[in-house]
Length: 34
Image (cartoon, rainbow, N blue to C red; front, side):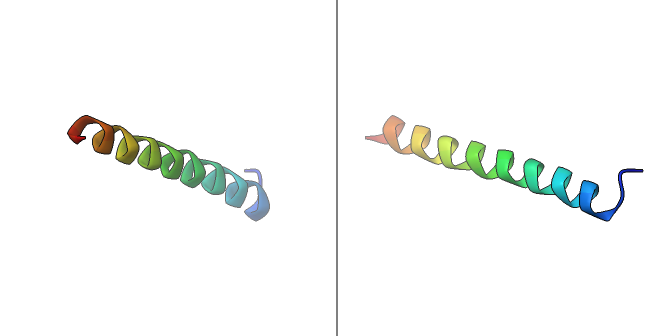
């Protein structure tokens, strides 16, 4: 167990990665349609 701060950091990193992938996916979709 890393503790609350450690788990919060893990979730923050996971959320950031998902957010970045979502942005890249949106841009890829827009370029495809254009």
